Image (cartoon, rainbow over all chains, first blue to last red; front, side):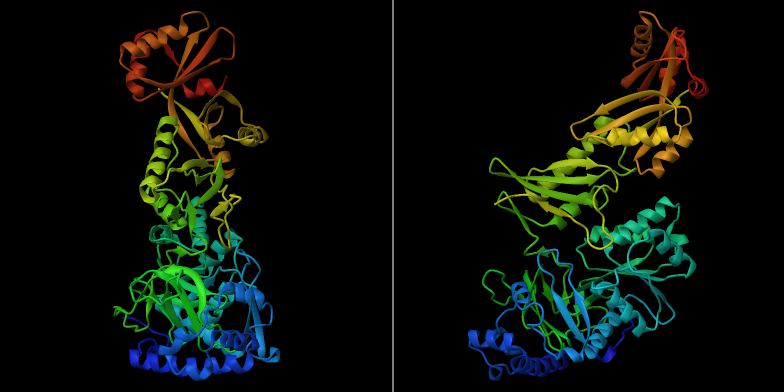
Length: 433
Length: 143
């Protein structure tokens, strides 16, 4: 029996969703035109005024907003509410440049927390559950978002924040945590640490986990589900839009439902900017239609993904997005070939390695080089040199057939790849172009 | 019949081997024999120690990937032809040696050979048949 946090919204008819979206979009466009000079200038330059936007069908007329706009407008340029109405700031990690700072009114926080509550409920959380939040608390949205959602659902909330693995495991066992929220790489790390302590899934009370804030693959999901003995759910979000909970997975685990009463999703051709139909891969673009303090219209996420409006077995009617296949900006072009780190991860996991890898790209004598560093595991180790080098060759062959590229595979000591309790450093590109 | 060797994965970079020997030295592990195999990017250290369980626990704690490998140890007189006799016996029995190494024992009169083979029983029988003495774990621990 599927449970919903807000059934009347989550299972609303398409007509109802479109009606909400149209009404809120029109209101949002007027709001930014009146209250955000940066937007008004951008719209004027684009030759569009609020009168041109009468519903969702007119969305395409609006100009795109990119991360560059956010940097240019830093810190207050996109502020949609007076500062004295704002109650919170969150910020991105700044891994791809200058930090993005987002503002929230109390109502923005409440709606965001509701989105997270929908995700938790879809993962099976009820007020009977103990929810362990091992996302970082602080400027990062992970901890605050799921914490708020957990409170809305009425779970007993364990605000662990990230790190201190021993303490995480102790609280998890002593407090009977049933739901775990953290990054997928930290979930894997927790699983490995438990194994090292001799704990089996039966020793751990967890039944489900919500994992997001970084890319992960189906193989990694199976791995986590097995080591922790849980069902692992994906969650998607961006600090720019609110944080986790923009979209979330249901029991069907066939894509993430986008909370369409708050966000309008589009897929565009990243080259031309033309909207693409359902089922076609392109760049994901979001318009936030309920946020007051930090409203974003047609924000280009750089995530490469596919949308589907097909009926979902869980009963939710909101559009689903596939797990992003990569990012338009983390896609590597190596010797002219498009390479997504997720493809490399798939090869490694299929061969039984852990998802701890690092990709090093360099340019030697005008030719790109690709090196993949893989951590040795007890399962993969033998005293026989030939067997290990044979397995190493298998990885090289696997990468060649997946990417069409020759890669150098280096085996490194366990836990030598910088592992994050926040986000993993997967790609090091040393090319000077 | 077979004795326990510890095999340790090491990165092929400055300081990797030192990292292992340091932790073993600090914890008082006595190495009887040591052999290193390496490829361009990693190595395998193979060691015979006084206390296998303790060493394995120390390595696990220090985060080294390792395993315990059964190997055949023989004691031979330290004079010309000793190794040749052992290899002849193994070769005649059709036993393939994956790798081997030697070390001198507690006194200078005998040496120990460590053989890694696919079939321990067959190797042991062949060596015994040739009058070569097999060394037990205890003997190596007490050297």
